[in-house]
Length: 404
Image (tube, rainbow, N blue to C red; front, side, top):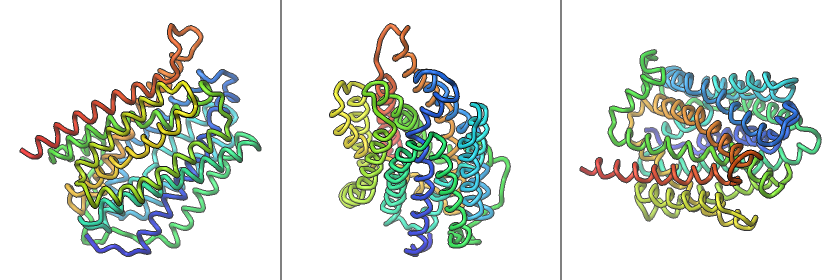
């Protein structure tokens, strides 16, 4: 791998911050937009929110390996720019949607082109060495968190001028990001490290078969699948959960998500740096999963609002597991297959997005409906906690097999 050029690393971080901010703008107002278009209550809106995520994920599941393979062949830059442009178009569909069908069309477009984070991760692998890879993945994850500080806070504030306003702002922000990338983003994959595009590997099943050749990678991916399923409880349910249980406003939801972003930045810039100098990646992954499990269970049984604060802090501290696992997986793959790796992971994460939001929002809707035999808004977080425990068990078994 080539040595790191600070300017290139800085621009990758900037791309992720702006792109994530545009994505985070829409979270605080999406429940209200769905209620307006459907003329329905919060439980019904939650169900449709889950199916919108399903539409996005189904397209990402199919197309992420294709885009990953294309980035290994043509380079990261053209794939990244097309992804940014696709998200901008998606936001315009959401901004001017006269009915719910438009929302599904927009989400499908975003899913087809949604590879910005995966390509950015491949760029980090391109410019990193074994010694600094974990820290660099911590920086890109911190950039993701920083975007969620800016995006939801702005989205919650803009929501005061109508539910469509944040989507217009998100479209403009993503388009600006695309323009900046066109003029300033340098290609990170050298020509000598590229490989021919292969349709047999540029599909979900082909990518999975290829990744399965690496035993440790296979175990880690299974664990990451469960983690990804569980983490959808935050982005899919948080707004509905806090509205239903504590009566939060759009602004308060936006500020809470911004606080999550701030904690993520601190975790990925400071905490990852501290623990990566003292502990190996495997131990970091285990500790992180234990913290995430505790956070989910606190969310599930939080009967007072103040409990959410320590729960968020513990949960975000657990996000160090993702950085460690990214570093382990990337270090186990050849240089000219990083795009395929990230595309395959993107496809798998898309698979969890296919299943997780409908399941989690559906469990929330069932547990809060008037006809439900039990009222328990924290049901999605209880499910997430159980899945994270299962992920930890798989991870430990994978490490033991790799040691043998």
